[in-house]
Image (cartoon, rainbow, N blue to C red; front, side, top):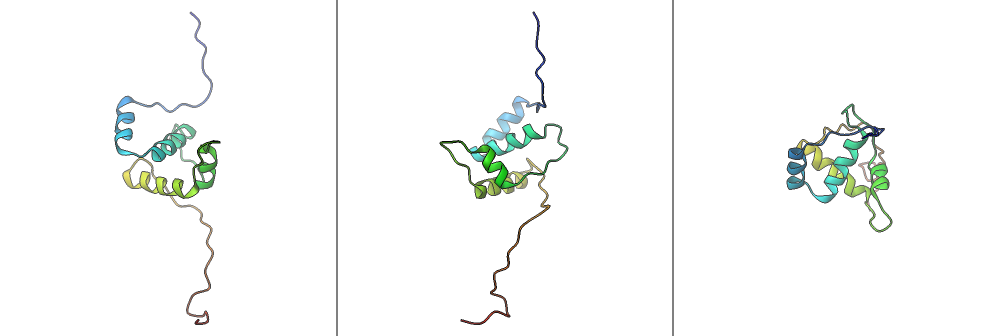
Length: 103
């Protein structure tokens, strides 16, 4: 019997880890967690944006929104499933500070 070696990176998922995660996480959190783990199986760290994750996990019949991804990432970080570090944000300041004219 000849076995063909499958090419690529793989995340070694143990049954205990799977059972623990399905009992603690929402559907969106599970999708995002294992998407990230499959991209970075050796836990080296990876730079991703919520927009890119949402785009990659959206299907023709089921769109995932960037805000859903953001909430899920925060929850995964809070629960200790991931260690998220904020590296870059886009900020726009609303002109409502003390120098703005009063209405």
